[in-house]
Amino acid sequence: KLTSREFHPDDTVVDVDGLKIGDGSMVMMAGPCSIEGLDQIMECARIAKKGGATVLRGGAFKPRTSPYAFQGLEEEGLKYIRQAADAYDMKVITEVMDEANLDLVCQYADILQIGARNMQNFKLLQAVGKTGKPVALKRGISGTIDEWLNAAEYIANEGNFNIIFVERGIRTYETATRNTFDISAIPVIQKLSHFPIIADPSHGVGVWDYVPSMALASVAAGADGMIVEIHPDPANAWSDGQQSLNEKTYLNMMEQVHVVEEAM
Ligand code: PEP
Ligand code: MN
Image (tube, rainbow, N blue to C red; front, side, top):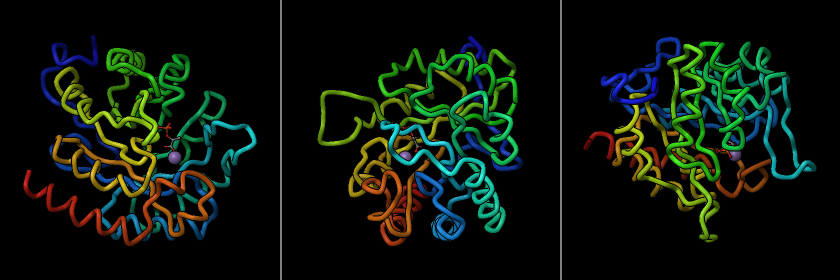
C-alpha cells in the first residue's frame, strides 16, 4: 500500500508552501471551531500566533450534529480567515465538507481538512486527492486504524502524497469526555505509515480543562504537530466553546508544550 512504511520506509515530510510537517519539529495549529466574523478571527490569529502557532484553523463549512445549529459563514468565512492568516503570516487550515465546494475552499485554504464524519466519504477523498493540496485527514468517530489508513490510501492513490493524519478521539462507552483520545494512535500510525500525524486534543476530550494534559501527552508521544481550538470568549463561542481555550489558558499550555518539546 502507498501509505505503508514498507512502500516508503522514510518519513514523508509534507510541505505547505514552505512550512514543513513531519520533519521532526512540532507544528502548531490553533484557531476557533467556527469563523464568526472578521474581528473574531483576527483576534484568534493574534492569540494563536503569540503562542507559537504557524497555522490558523477555523471552520467555514461546519458539520454540525443538528441541522438547526450554526452551519458556518461559508465563503464569507473563508475570506475572513484568509485575511487574518495573511495579516499574521500564517497558513490556513479549514474543512471541506463536500465536492461541490472543493474548488471554492481550495481558493482560500493551504491545508484541506477532512472531518471525522467524512473519513469514509470515498468520493470526497478521491476529489481532494486529485487537487494535490495538503490534506489533514481526521480519524472517523468510530474509525479503526486500518479503516483510517485505507481512507488515506484513497487520497494517495490519486497521486497526492501530502497527507497529515489527525487523531481527534474515538467513540467509546466513556461519557466523562466527549470522545476517548487515543494517544496510542500516534506511535501506531508512525510505525505503520510514513505520513505525519498530529493531535487534536480539543475534540479528543471535548472539555477545555483536560486539553492541556492531553496536548502535553501528545508532544511526549512524538506527534508531528497539534491542532487546538481557541476563542477570545469561549462562553460565547458559536460552536465548541466548552472545549476552547481562552488566551490565558492557551498561552499557559503553550509554555508547557515548549518545555516538553525542548526535552524531546
Ligand atoms: C472541527 O475541527 O471543528 C471538527 C468538526 O472536527 P471533527 O471533524 O474532528 O469532529
Ligand atoms: Mn470544533
